[in-house]
Length: 219
Image (cartoon, rainbow, N blue to C red; front, side, top):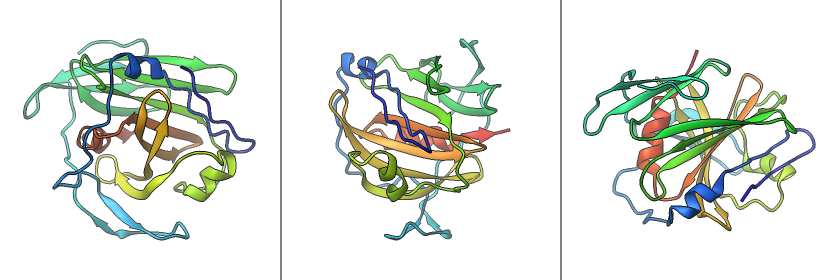
């Protein structure tokens, strides 16, 4: 089912191919973990952050090296455990690692000038979506308050600012939300050079998506 978030100024929108996850029977996994995979910056109610207080290191992966996608390329490489692949998109100038068994595709949304990148794994609930849309506000990192200005009804649970990307390249707002098709979801939202990136994944896959985000790199 298509799902949109729209707002007047920032144009918050997530067009999610939720049927993929739902049909594969994605279910919420236990969120309890002895190791927090996210590298956090301190968070306060007014939305201020202190990057110097970041804790808990991300797993850093070296650059990867397989197959061409609809747009962008992937190069297969081995890591500890299963092989991972490096995906690169020339239009937006970002690259990331993902398991080599996952496929990727992208769909344009002409109405809002956005684009969806869908990464699909063979197993139940494996994969994630990235939705990009134009964003012209001079913000470094989003806050729950700013999101609710455009999407008042959105569920935002346990918001945290985290340091992501290779070498701690940028900051993102992460939180849990809810969707009628997917159930509980993990959201990773960040801003870069005039675009808002909204990453959505079924909840309970923090270690996996944090590993992916630890490899993210902008040109």
